[in-house]
Image (cartoon, rainbow, N blue to C red; front, side, top):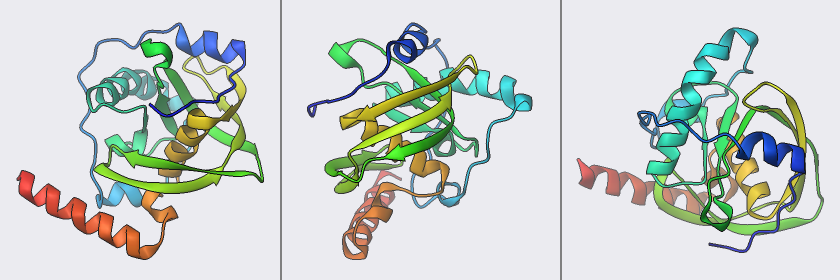
Amino acid sequence: MPDMDTHIPDAATEADAGAEPLPAEPLPILVAPHPLLKSRARPVTEADRATIAALIPRMFAAMYRAPGIGLAAPQVGHLLRLLVIDLMPDDKPAPMVIINPEILAASSELCEREEGCLSLPGQYAQVVRPARIKLRYLDRDYARREIEAEGLLGTCIQHEMDHLEGTIFVDHISSLKRNMIMRKLAKEQRLKK
C-alpha cells in the first residue's frame, strides 16, 4: 500500500472508527459507462435517514468485497451525497461515513497519485489533485464534522466526491489515455459475459 500522510482530528476518528460495519448483503457496483455514473447526486435530507441507514452497511459490504477503500452512493445506483471510506490503517477496520461532504479549502500544492476505481475495475492512471483539503460533512449520526486530509485519505475523499458530481477519475486525464482505458474496460467486460 502507498505511503499515507494523513491528519484526522481525534473526534472524527473516534466517531467513525468505533462503529463496526454490520454484516450486510453487498450492493452491486455499477461499471462505467453506466449512465448513473455521469449523474449528479442530490444532498441527503432528514427524509433520507432510513434509506441512508440501510445503505451504509450494504455499501461497506460491497466495498470490502471488491476490495476497495472508498465507495460513493452513485456507484451502487443511489444518487445521494454519501461516501464510505476505510483505508484499513495497520490492517484494522477504520470505517468513515461521509454525508453531504463539502470541501472548505484545498491547497494550491498538488500531488500526483495512481488511482483506480471500483466502477472501472482493473484500470489505473496517475491523477493530479490538491495535496491537502479541509472537509466539512455529517457522520453516520448526522453530527457535523470537519477534518483536514492529505495523502491517501485526501485523494480518496476527492476521488469519491467526484462521483457525487458525475465525474470519474479518468475525466482528469488526457482524452487519449481516457479513451484507451475505456476501450480496454469495455473489452474486458465483454469477455466476462
